Image (tube, rainbow, N blue to C red; front, top):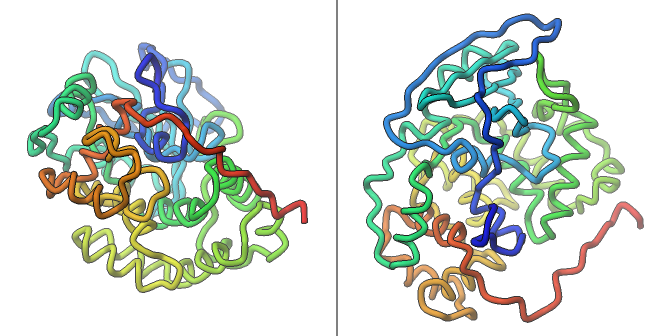
Length: 337
């Protein structure tokens, strides 16, 4: 987040989900030998901010699957039901222009409206606090993305369990670059598609260790990829049923399932509980209570029932966070052991 409303960069405020997309015309696309991709133009039904809508999909500034380019475009590399694909999205004069490459190109373009929040309904949200109302007013282009993909949000969410932001982002970056595959098409340099489920299952234990991933998180990912097809079926369910299915996998709890369906389903009510920072931020912003726990946070968000995740995102984007009173959580690196 840029400007004077920037919160300190904890993992939670980063999840406010705003990525700086440079101002550009968005119609100049560098060509490479991969040739032209499939194209689609789409006009959003209202204000749309690419950095806000797609920001939650970026796992750190070095995410190999996500890139905000200097020409004002956003690139994503993903593994779709039809195969791997690369998507480039840009806006000009209120029109979204997208181009995609690879076996998954057609699927990515078909899902483009949902990815950019077409299935979201911002009009259903009614601010109940002046801070929330101000944040909404400053960011009219906020819509909740719906990727239609579970594993690409689930695995990095598992990596973020109970570690620092830097540790989680580093693990994701190292594992995707080493075991993923280069993004198809004229993607920016060093963009990769995340590994296939079978590839995740075959990663040796020492490679998890070198990436700084402890056995508990690695084992959770291994259990998840063994039932990857069943988990991806959850995209056809409502958010609550999807969360229940995800939580059948040992090691996936309410925190991880909420973080996943917020992205895969565009779940407007999937508020994250069990977080280290979020209750204190919400409590401080809405009631001046920096020591709020999950129960207090849920009570404060009760007026936003059905839209609690959107309310939490607006609070994070408001930049109103309590001053730090304790040292930052120390960063560990088990790869050095």
